[in-house]
Image 1 (spheres, one colour):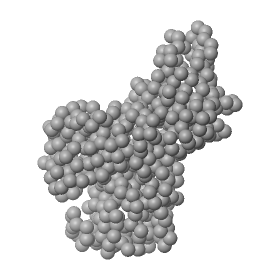
Image 2 (spheres, one colour):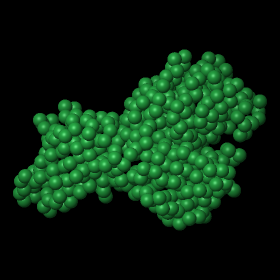
Image 3 (cartoon, helix red, strand yellow):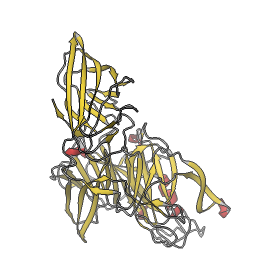
Image 4 (cartoon, one colour):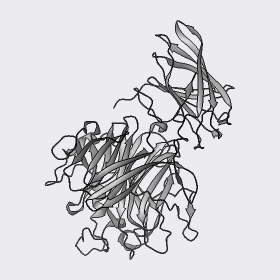
Length: 505
């Protein structure tokens, strides 16, 4: 796997950098993930406020994925994958499968889209892996082209097909039965993010179970999350062949975790990791047990370490005691149900939830009729309000809210020194920032001051230190660096602050 050249420099000298954001966003803890050698990813400001995913003779939209660097949006309509560019033009579709394609996520590591795909009658549960770069025409067939592969998940099968009442008969795709361990109905949510208990490091694919809403049992009130390292999944990938479902997949999971949310209807439909808030968001269909608050969205803090504990309501081996597992606590935010302690939001997030960075998300809503389903995306921002956690983004919020003056103060053979002034031109203060730009002539950082900086290829990301995070409206501040310049220097390009483009002097 290709990994970009990385240079990391950390110093603490008295000066500052600033960043603007039209509305406050979570403070930056440091430079974000490496954007790759080719370019700074497009700023949130370049994304459309709204987009329609077309009308299709399928079931409703089930998930979305966004490739910000490539400029594409992907929609899952359960039996069809649709690819659009950011201007709203249809680029291509993948069809020719009858299984249920659920939630999606884009893996920036390999440039492919991953999605849940299940065939309950065959007890076959897969992660679909789509080479979306090659999706360039309408009507591409998942089974007759090499763009669509699948990886089987034995752990999901074993829980789904468990004969829990021991009568020797598995009851199949039936919710009102004692079968299905933890009430598992298969899989739906998928997302890439760090291992639970961490906010960085190698990315894991996380898969969330569907959970039957059966109100007569007590062992189906946890969300079940599996994590996988997909770096070696090429050995498991097989073409999709519905007449002969394969069983090629990892025998073991890298982690199995439980989140007590109370009852839901079909578990986590959309799972999403937001690096800006370092949280996992879980969008569900509302549950029906009256003893629970039955919220529509939940969150888990990424840094919260899993703790082994009792799975309340789940009988232990042989029916003795209570089963134990690795528990993830719900984030201390949102509404709270005083009787159960469960926290969450009354926020629809079950058919498309995609974090975009800097506190912004795409939310999908579905509409239409049988055989004519459509989806609408809306760009929203996180508010932190327990009653209304998202608000529609506006073009004014996405306008440039910063100014940058980048000056080369001195140059010598194969070296230079630069000073950068940054001004917050927004009407609101900021607390926490990350600046990014791309060098134009192969320059590289050598020493920096007043920032925590990383360089990946030509791309530099510089973040505030602990003492220089705040910048009031109209305030400006500065930072600087010494660099190597084997081919001279050039004005930087694609200058952004907290993902927003800046006016440059």
